[in-house]
Length: 304
Image (tube, rainbow, N blue to C red; front, side, top):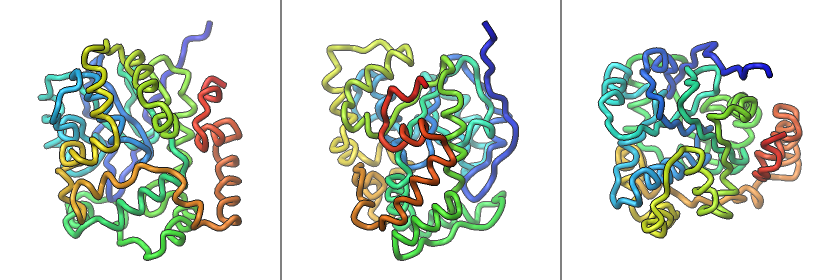
């Protein structure tokens, strides 16, 4: 049997948000957990789930502080890396990079979350349109930015979506390569694919699968509390604990960041022509199986 090939870093990716060079100096631990997504795909939700599994449903965990975004360029790596090295709990960190732009560990565990791109953009628009001046200053004015600054969004969410589609993720970062890169390594033993739809439909069931993958024993006496603390209602009410900097970068604070957690809001806005264009692009970029999984989360497609 041929030995499984693990990915290797092939390039750097840097823009107003990213600095992939941080990975070059990152010191892995064998039990590290990484939550990987294209942004607004359920990252904060899964970070909360993992924190609750690790800490037996403990209240008031500072999940955002415990689980920072590794490749975010603010703060710079000279500050971030020592802070990560100082963590004493089992680390669970997040990345929004495609596989070929990060250093990949053969022993760490990777959890990748998929979500329909149309739903992603609706959440991204809320995130972007409610960002305050401090957010723009941090991303655009902190030394080290590569490429143009990020500007304020269009007034129309329909226009915002079309520009994102036509310019492949603009003004954030490419969408299709992110999905493709993680889908391509889905069969590796240390990679687990989740989907936003499946979490919505059966969160407790998906949590148990995730715990098995991460080798986290479930404290059954605490199970009800663990599940409750991962519900949208609980997270919304305790948003300052799970949102970066307690929501200081968004108008309305942390509860703006954790907005609705729903899918399909695009249905009454996008025309049939735009919807067809998105679906055609998805199949062209991803192939039929991956495109179908991204749209609906069918777990039978993951093993294909």
